[in-house]
Structure formats: structure tokens, C-alpha cells
Image (cartoon, rainbow, N blue to C red):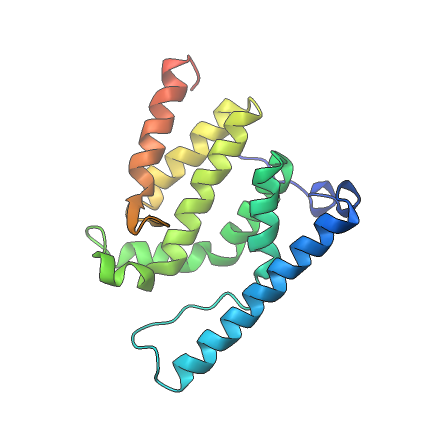
Length: 179
């Protein structure tokens, strides 16, 4: 079973210098302002299709990236588990509606599936880095079995298939003698 990390074990604010905290705050404000502008444009029909906003989740976004950059794997674990806890039920519904990967132009409509599948993948990576290979294998297996059609956006302009990547990570773990 994948263990739960209590919030008190999360990334602690006293680990950061004041300049770093100011930088993180600036990033959160920037994301919030961007999201508010997108919402305004969407409500004025300036953006077509479906629009998923992350207003209120700026801390999770900035915190998870900061934790990854600092190799704060407990922090990564807290943020990924928060995403999973918030959106796993919707991700399961979205997965159930698919029989194959959503095409690129529709992939963002499956935001919960993509977010949760990616969160399990990142969790698996953080667990592997900590030597918790049995739990890492379970996280990757969860992607393969329950979130098979999750996709993650790459800034280079394409979606990668999270289950395919998890299968590769699981094979690496097995080759090293892990479960």
C-alpha cells in the first residue's frame, strides 16, 4: 500500500530563504492573474471550447515544482497526493468514457484524468528516488491499470502517454530486482 504523508511532514517554509519565498509568492500571483484573465476572456467568448482553470491551486502548482527542483521528495509526495485526493473520482469517470486516447484537440477535456495519471507517475518517480521501490511500482501500476488513457502535455507541443512512461519505469524497477 502506498503510504500517506501527513501535511506536517510537507515541505516546510523554514527551509526557504526570504528571497526564495518572495520568488514563490511572485509565481503564485502571476499564475493567479493569468488564470483570472483567461477566465474573463472565456466568459466573454474570446476563448472557445472547454476551459479548465486552476484558481486556488497556485500553491500546489508552485510548491510541487519547487519541491521537485529541490529534490524535496516528501514535498512532491504531499502535492501529488493532494491532486489525487481532489480529482481521482472525476479522473475515474473520465477514464470510463474513453476506449482510446483522446485526440490532441480534445485531450484537455480530460483534465482530471491527465492530472491524476501524471500525479501518480510523478509520485512513482519521487518514491523511486527515495528507494521506496515497492510503493513506486504500485504507483506506476495504478497508472497502467486505472488511468491508461492519461496524457501529459509537453511544452514542446505534444502530449505524452503517461501509462506508456509508467510501463517503462515499471520495467526498469523489475530489471533492478524490485517488485
